[in-house]
Picture 1 (cartoon, helix red, strand yellow):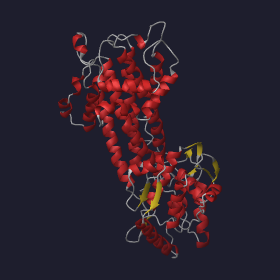
Picture 2: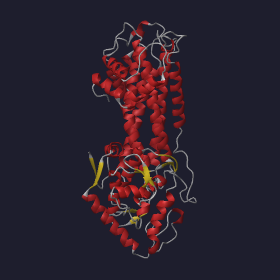
Picture 3: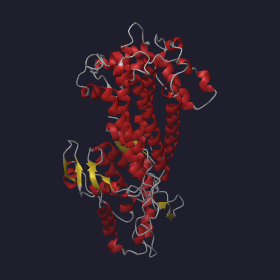
Picture 4: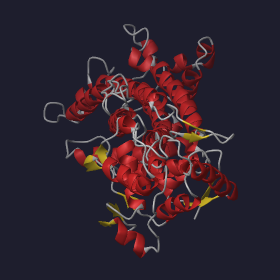
Length: 512
């Protein structure tokens, strides 16, 4: 099994995906263990002094003015975990919990938090055992970190609360730890606070969304090309010299992908003989511009994620010169903004895909295709209601594009008077990515059927490869009306698993 070694300099997106989705094992580097021990010695020295230090010998948040005596400090650390584990609602997905735990471990191993090496090792042991704390949907405001979600994870390290075992069964965390030979941690000064104070949940979801969107944007380029072909559109608008004069890199990449899919097509360009149509509609002609803008948004979000993956997010932090200083680095604004920005791009990509699908089904705009791509229009309804489903999904995408980060609800008796709502931005982006997959699947279903209805015209080799692959996956072609939901589910699974991109790339080579 692949092993991810965590050092002091952060981790990569591929590390996060390996741990969260592929179950990679985790090891702590010698450098990380040394840095943990050095930072802990600083915290122990401060704890021995009479002067109050936030997070070490004081309360938290609005209660930070109280100095805590040494005999109560272990209780203080336990209490912050127990009291902050206040989430409600449905359980969060296993991959999200693994990502957030791994990213908190990443910060702990930076040597900036003052956590003991044995606590970090226990975090790695829990992940390696396949134990997943039960984390709930609601509880994070994305400031002072993803407090409630991280608290539920810390509770598991203490042997309290509930967790899911590697067999998928939810049991008391203490039982699961004992079954895997893991000793619960006894938290000391600052450790409870350090386990809660990070943007790890929203960052993990950002990393996974970017990975999913990389596939979906290629998928959208492919379905846009198939629709252009089915509508007998012109691929001249994809010429690289046209995109070079507006040098957005995402736009050029999308246009190049579409051109690669359409290479050798016998359908594109036929509308030049159709006098009333001088040029294609925006949803077809401007596909690279819209998808390209989304790709450039992803590039910016990826840069933010890269910086955050290299960050040590905690408060207070142990600095290299031995000072322990308070800060505001736990604020989730940098991550929250790009999560919301991506949701806007996702909604627009879904919107333009739906407009192309609608054009394929409308006999007044489809240039010779039967109404709703039906076998016997009137007797058959064809794909009429598939487009309704797609439109409902796009409506939901638009609602999900409303930014969470523009909201702020003060908390902690106005000590935390401005929060990022980054966790909420991440949760809605996950839903948006999920729904975008379905939207693209509907366009794929309609476009492949439409191409097959263009009798006497030969599609591009890449289009043919996609049609053959999607039919082999159980998505039926043209014919009389049938139960559509299984076809749509099969198309969704085909896109979701990356098979659409893989099928096209058997002809085009790697798409951009």
